[in-house]
Image (cartoon, one colour):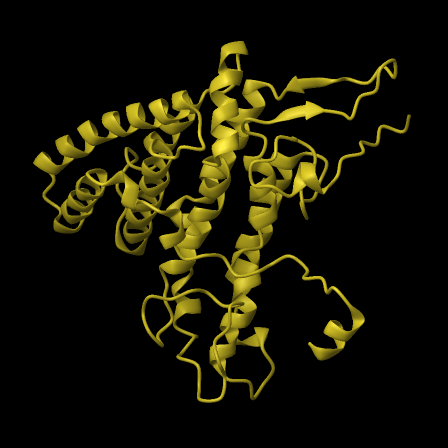
Length: 313
C-alpha cells in the first residue's frame, strides 16, 4: 500500500538478475540519473586527490589504498544500470492481490542505461590524472600488497592501465552474462533492446569511435580488447541460448571486416599492432576468458559466520 516492493537477495545479487529495481548498494530514485551524479562526485574526488589524503609521515605508496575506493566509487551504480538492460519489473504477485505481475523495462530506458554505462568507460573517464600517478611510488619494505589494491602487470611500479582495464571489465561482466543475453534475444521479439543491437552499439562506441592519443589511446585500445574477450567468449558459451551465440558470431564477423579494412589503411604502428592482435585472437575464440582480466578489489561489506571468527580477524 505504501509503494514498497519486497524482493530478496535472489533478485538482487546474481550478475544475471532480471529485476530493474533490486540491486546491491546503489543509490537514488532514478538509477541512470544517479549514475551521472556518482560520476560527477568521482571526477571531483579524483581532481582533488593529493598527498593530503593520507596522514603526515605515512609512506606515499599508501595513497593507492585510498585511491582504490575513489576510483571504483561508481561500481555499484554501474552494476544497477547494466541490470536495466534485459531487465524486467515484477512482483511476487498473489492471485487476486492486484499487483503488476511482470512487464519488461521499456527499450528507451534500456538504451539510455546502456549509453550512460558506455560513457563511464570512455577513456577520458577511465584515465587517472598524471598528478596522481606521479605521487605513488613502489611500496616500501614491510608494507605488503593485498587484494584491496589495484592488480598490476608492471611489477612494483604503479600500473596506470590495469585500473582502467578492471573498470571496463565491470559493466561487460554484467552485460554479457549468459542469462541476460539469452533474455534479450527473447524480449526483442516484443520490442525490447536486442542483443545484436547492444553488441553493435558497443562496437560503434569503442572499436569504431574516433581514435585517441597518448594514455587515452592505450586505454581505448585496451577497452576494445576487453570487449572483444567478452564477444568471443559469448560466441562459444554453451550456457547462452543458440540465438545469443549466433548474434555474437554475427557481430564478430562484422567487426572482423572492419578491423581488416582498418589494418590495410593504418599508418599508426601501435594501432596496427592492436588490430593484428585482435585478428589473431579471433582465430581462437575458446581462448577468450574474461578471468584473464584484472579483477576488481573487494568492495561490499564482508560478513562473518560467528563471533569467534570476528574476534580472530
